[in-house]
Length: 168
Image (tube, rainbow, N blue to C red; front, side, top):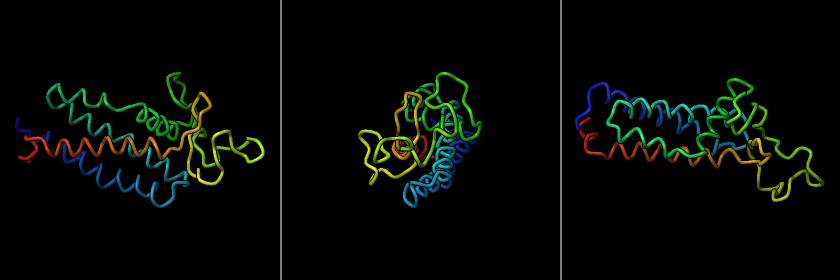
C-alpha cells in the first residue's frame, strides 16, 4: 500500500505531536515532579488528544487500522475524563470515571484516620497526583498515564515499521 500525500501528512502530524508535545509534557510530569497538579492536568490533556491524531490517520487507511484504537483500555477513558473535567469543571454523563475537576488532587488522603491515609496507603511513598473515582477508589494519575503513553509510542513504532511507511 502506498500512502497518499494527505495520509503521509496525517502520519507526520501524529509523529510530531507525540514526539514534540506529548512525550515531553508527560515526561516533565513523571520525571520532574509527579506531585505537580498543573503538570498532571497538562499531561492528561495532551495525551488524551493524541487519539484524535491517530484516529484521523487510521480513518484514512484501510478498515483493519480503525480497530487498532479499540485496544485503548479503560486507562485511556480515565485520562480522557481527567482532560474533560479539567476543561469543563463538571462532567454530567453517568458513564464517566470522575464527576468533577476537583476529583484530581495532590491531597487525596484528607479526612482519613490517624495517619491521614486510607487502609492500604502509606503516607510516605505515595506522593503524587491522585484521582478519586466515582466508586471512591484512589488512583495515582501517573500509572494510567504511563500505560496510555506506551500504547501510543507502540502505535508510532508499529506505523514506522510497516512496509508502506518506508516510502515516506
